[in-house]
Image (tube, rainbow, N blue to C red):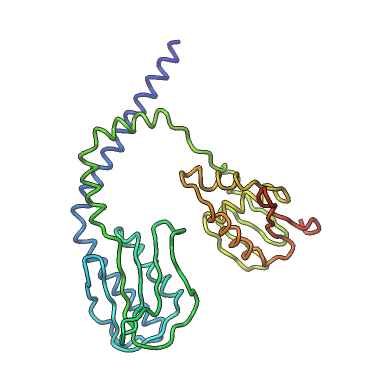
Length: 299
């Protein structure tokens, strides 16, 4: 009984200390964000200019200038160029994503490439903090040489700042809710770490679950985090029917998100990536779910 009381006391002290540290971290983050806003916005303009510079280099132009970046609105900027250029759509997407990842306030933004003459949209895409919400079309296509302007519009940060101020005023209430939540919450079920350390042989394909890659004949195919988790469930039970409800629960519902058509979308993407080996395929088991079929002669 004495040991039980001591254990309970230690748990309460641990929870209190954890809540206190979390609240202090929130306060420090809020104040530091307020003081660094101007610096971050100025740094953003430099990153945007760097996008134009790299786009010219990719077009084979190392001489002409990127014209001064225009600020069209509070969260919208325009890049223009001295001469005409050409670009690959996927290169532009990768360049903006790589450079703007250095901007702490640029988690969500929309990019539109406009024709100089009539401001019509030649190409556009949207990047989100949650990658599954990205909207990217026509990847890999080369745009004809011409006069282009690039508009980048960021999701307004004013809302986030207002949330920070509201959070600071609500700290006592959050402390109480956090303490109750930490006592009652159950850790969500996750796939054991040991599984991610294994390599799976699927026909002639080697599946590296930890690094999210498919390897066949020295060719490497990258997988997204969700694709890797879905394939891991199949790889652990090859040639067995996996219920649709199980996939939805283990991949999405345990994270607090319920998704319908997204599952079919990820299955379709996996099928295309597994087409490198005709001996393995994901088939639909009508009314039940899916199955990863592997030809027994190559397992």
